[in-house]
Image (cartoon, rainbow over all chains, first blue to last red; front, side, top):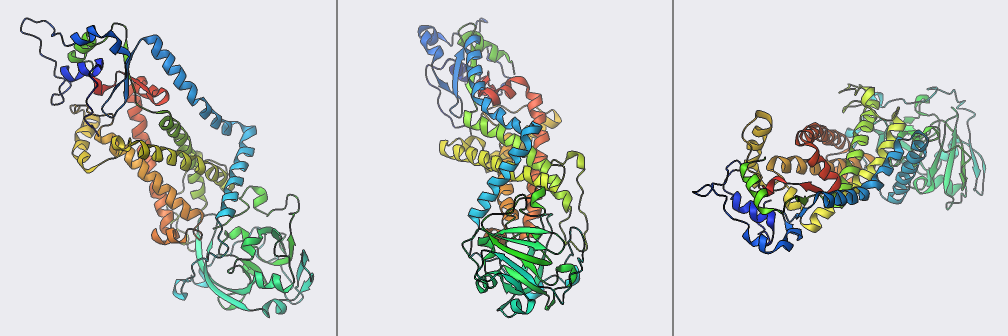
Length: 304
Length: 232
């Protein structure tokens, strides 16, 4: 806004400007000369006060205005350009050798913030049955085979790691724990999402039942289709995190991960491992085995 | 705008061999501008790559593509690569944006940039001057009404990108924001609309920079502009 800051009395440029071009006139209007054709002596005071030339004046929004010699201007410009030099550091992203490590740092920063942001008791809103997508509109997503041909009759879940009662657990043992049914949103990293109906056991209930060390950092899972994942314990213990064995009131079908899959409304789809085979409670992830997609460049936290 | 008035002025009011310069862009604004320029470029191009993974605003089944951005203008190689760029430069974008906005508010400089209702009447004369070769309206302030409209719009689109981006990134943690923006689907649409805002702004901005020449461009690097128009 043109706040009408009065120029300082000793401001040469502006004093001249105000007299030669009043605000009401357009800039094209030349200042009329005196009757005898002489240029009016508008700048008498400046000749009396030469020191005023170097003093600070201000533009319409308080900009500092100076009259400088070309050499001074060059010096000022060089000094100001030097202050911007650190910005060139961002060009490191264009150097092939540095690009990947820098992007990995960026991803690590985002994952760190994601974990900090995660509310252990913050629930994903659940939806009414009328908002749930029809079963045939719930996509089958898989990375290798839709059906890894799990022998459902002989299937057991292998439980390993920091647990008091490791071993093989049958589906009936998992289903004996309290059942939770929820309508929640499944979000794919690609950008699509679908609200589904899921039923299963709270992962936290199952881990307590096998005497897992709940202060451990991770739950690692391995799947019948060689997919693998690792989940932060805070998310595993989230009340909406399920070992899911039902969708839409039916036993999980093979395409959706029979007999057991992860279902976490606080995570992206690629974290929701299907066809669970082995789970392991641990503080240390197996080297280079953070998750099938994560090991190829997707972010590990994958939180919503 | 070398009018005779200006010549009179420079002959009379200045010591010989001096140049009038005005400090238009404080360091923090220049740093924010250039960091943001890089970030916006990276976020738009990587965002297009992300959009290619599901170029629709409808359901997954049946999928109806809205627009598949050409691979040539999409950064990152594949979805994971694009996400890495996006999740890295979002920090630079938001950081530089907040730095600028906080600075403008604290110093009161927002008054010279923020488009206000009284600026509305000045937009058309300025647009007519640029696009239809009309007469140039008098220069009264650092930014003319059309500039204020353009710059204020980018701040708006930046804030919109930030808020809708938060919802897309963490719809559960920011469930209340998700709810306010009308849900995950709408947040995705608004995020795209905000991008369109930037895409609309950038060509006009670059053309204006080209038309106004080196002195104007250089001032966004050094902060100092030689012979600014409002002093003529």
